[in-house]
Length: 131
Image (tube, helix red, strand yellow):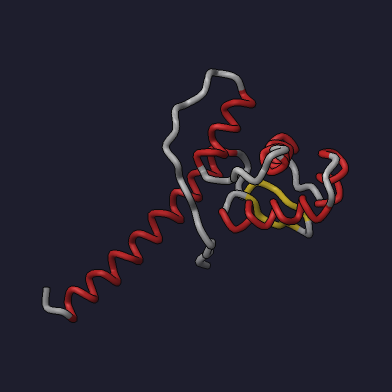
């Protein structure tokens, strides 16, 4: 089964000090998960809650725990799902794999697969243009 995601963004920024919260923030910023519009860091707090939960959680649980509206939670979850870092399991939300490292490895495979597909198409175009 091929999984398609809308967009994966990677931004190269300096690594943080050795504290967990700054490291998770660095990782999520490196993946382009947050924007300037997220003034109250609700997307980051949501991402952190999912990472810390270690089990699938409902949008209602997340909204209650983070003191956010369900609409805000759903908005950010949609972005996290589109990025490939979060999945839906039985109407609940979880990291795509058992932990961040495994999730990133799966995302890396998505990127490599996308590049392979682009290379195949480029090869086909080159052949058709006799390049």
